[in-house]
Figure 1 (cartoon, rainbow, N blue to C red):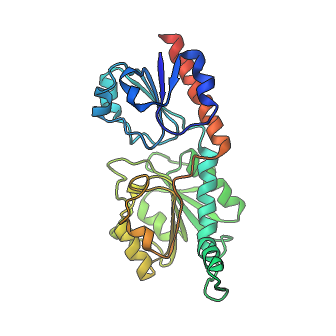
Figure 2 (figure 1 turned 90 degrees about the vertical axis):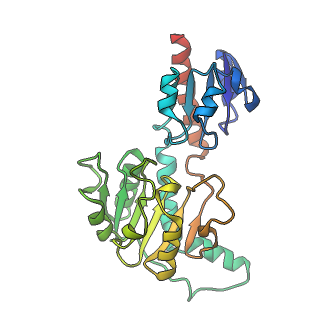
Figure 3 (figure 1 turned 30 degrees about the horizontal axis):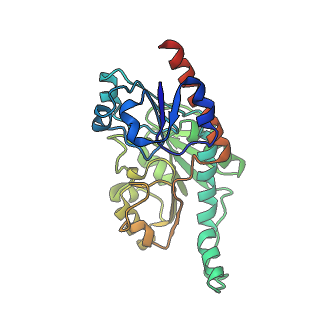
Length: 293
């Protein structure tokens, strides 16, 4: 069988998968591929699937599957998997790094020093100890972030319509309550019809004045223009994100020109250790598929 590695994976993965068949990164061969490995860049749409008549297995290296038309894939007998177990630590650590980084103005401080500026008085820090964080989405990553927040002496509250209780968070039954109590809000929700644009002007009005927002879930779960307006008005103290409407974001993305932001190029799942874990899960899934052919 032909295995197409369509996006960036670990450098040793092609060699490990060679025992199952031919491995290629040539996207022009998608029509011949029986297995396709993707991350966030490749979009497995209806048109993509129609152009891959031999496709039987899609593996998404990461958590979100919003770039795969799973319903159409199902009608074509195509199995779709992610590697959710792999990315928990990597993304939770990035979310925490963003939270620490933006409240300590790490990005602005570094840039200003390189410009010959000394902004000791202008860049006031704030501590995490004793603050309340609302984790939106209490799955693997959200729970891992909650554990880290507790270790820093934070109060952890959570909101997730599918999770009733958590060992690391005091669960809230409605979003407004969670937002109203939080000094920090960290987003870990998948992109669905219900979560698209969830954090908008109306919801931002429910935040504490001066709250901080961190997003390592999905870029389209927020309305960019509304976030920028809240930052400019002071309703939000800062917005830190690793996720975007598109990878990379459009040049006219309003967040790119906003000073009260800390921005990363979707690095959450890209740690060396996580790429090894993702590869191991991909190898196992292909082995199971190969045995069932």
